[in-house]
Amino acid sequence: MRKSILIVIATVFLISGNMVAQEKAESKKEPKSYKPIRITLSEDGQYYLRVLTWAQIWTTHVNNNPGTIGNDLQPDNTSTNIGIRRARMLFWAQMGPRWMILTHFGMNNQTFNKGGVSGTNGKKPQLYMHDVWTEFMVVPKKLYIGTGLHYWNGVSRAANFSTLNFMTLDAPIFNWYSIETNDQFARQLGIYIKGQLNRLDYRLALNQPFQNGRNPYLQTQKTTNSFNDELAAKNAATDTWSQAGYFKLMLKDIAAGKLPYEIGLCMDGQELLNIGAGFYNHPNSTYTLDPGTGNDSLKFYNQTIFGLDIFYNHAVGNKGYIFNAYGLFQNMNYGKNYLRNIGVFNTSNMIGNQEQLGDEYANRSAMGAGNVQPTLGTGNILYGQLGLRFPRFENGAAFMPYLTGTYKNFEAIDEPSFQYDIGLNYFINKHYAKITLQYGVRPIYKFDASQENGISQNGLKGQLTLQTHIWL
Image 1 (cartoon, rainbow, N blue to C red):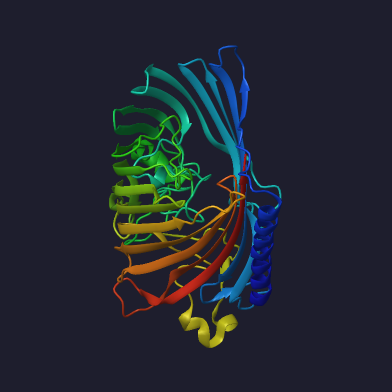
Image 2: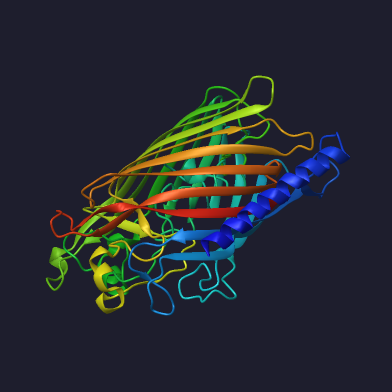
């Protein structure tokens, strides 16, 4: 199977290379400029509707966590899958200079056995709203007020990343600090203000997080942010509102702040040097509970996240190179020993028992099956990414290699970890049509009674991902 997927990937890039050569031979001209879908609704152009649509398709080859078993209940060391990472549509209507409404819907992570939402089997996944907000301009450029299900997040640039123009294959996921617990795919219902004061871009929000309704882990040493109905009824603290903010200082060129989606890579070589800082706070949103001892043993914690980051994007020299770099420090406090494991685009469900795994049972993953890994938790994360886009070919296409590194130090794990990704973008037409190949590794943990927290590192596992991405 590994040989098969490598053949497929090689074929894709060979075809791409042949396309470059053929187009170079056929034409010496730059591709025609892209014209967005914009429907003008008034003679002066102040009323208009903008339409965007995009899709990202993934093919993955995963070295599964130790102990993973497949649907045949036999050990499954590797898995190969194809599916829809994202399929979205976005509409925004500008109603004169003062009013705007934005609607964004779609689905995510559909594979052959999962539909992107818990409980679905892969077919007919749920199509749902990602963003729905209305906005009013109070002071041009300086102050706007909006309400609804929105993406004006706090903490960092990465928490506000656009999925249309990543420099890398995808976001590191921990940047969405409460993803799919008390938010709706990184969005919450609330009120926000935003604007630009000369070189300072700001966004602040007061939100009412969702109650996800999952049962809590009734453990003494670990914290959960999942409330069941009984606890929610007895503790009004579960209805607290969250506060979020992010501020960035634009030291070079000033980027537009009309929409919340932050650019990962600016393909025109614009010089952007931004230093940012932000926060997120949700009072009494996580808790610990001693099983069987009653509500007097219930202890609540605030979910508090702080971030510091720096972003740089600029053309290098006069030959067409573009250098891109981003660094993020994220401090997280969810409560005592809080740890959350996440597996993106993960099709594996089960860790085998002793009978199924035999001698390998002692080496089984403590995190879960497939590509699950520790992603969010009380502690610190340091993340960085670097990329260099090479000069464009005569037909406008270009290659860009990149590298990322992530250092995680969680309270619930005795040892810090380091992981990396190495990738290559092939831009057929900037971000509008591109192919990305990435290989990344993640830390593996096994049960270990000699460690204070009961687990220890057990090496690294890798994943190869091929993405095709098109948007209009």
